[in-house]
Amino acid sequence: EPEVTQTPSHQVTQMGQEVILRCVPISNHLYFYWYRQILGQKVEFLVSFYNNEISEKSEIFDDQFSVERPDGSNFTLKIRSTKLEDSAMYFCASSERLAVLQETQYFGPGTRLLVL
Amino acid sequence: DAKTTQPPSMDCAEGRAANLPCNHSTISGNEYVYWYRQIHSQGPQYIIHGLKNNETNEMASLIITEDRKSSTLILPHATLRDTAVYYCIVRPGDQTGANNLFFGTGTRLTVIP
Image 1 (cartoon, chains in turn purple, brown):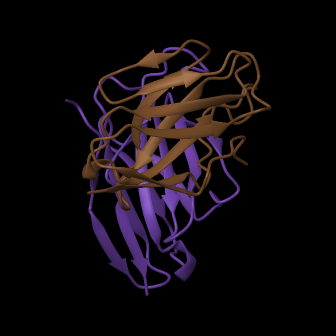
Image 2 (cartoon, chains in turn brown, green):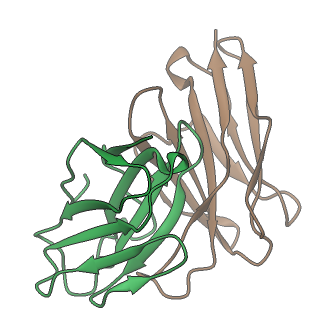
Image 3 (cartoon, each protein chain N blue to C red):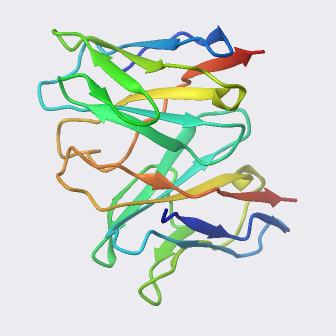
């Protein structure tokens, strides 16, 4: 069964450093998402991406964040200058969206980011 | 914010049916009800979704009331591996926020041996 994969599974970085989280969505999916979950809190939407551009983003997704689909298979989330509060699990998701309101998003296993 | 209300926790004996309720009294006519679960910090896992009719797949059944103001997810024979947080999600009906899923706090289901 096809699945979303994410690398690395864990990432430790120093505050102020740049990190890139990588995702390989399910191959025939066209819609891509990033969510995050701070330890003990809810899963929160960050950004959605379609046709090589951001279609929606939350207030969390500020100028320090960017997304890219560099090669037609990978989907990346870059945090330009990490802060302590960026420590969280980051989940990638993808969907094929059969219709606007009927869409099943499939999630990857997540990358646990720890900012020291 | 999530448009659903779920009990914070439930227990279920192994092998018995787990019935997880969800209230969504402000649901609009074109909004689907989705259920996901999250097993201990893993990625959310899709379970099932529906609009107005009851639905069943290999994982679960979804019963939606006639007025669509509430629904119940049924795991027919719960196993220890079904211990997880279960999220009931109503997709927003307007174009703003139509992409994303709003996860609430869900119901923490514990399956007891």
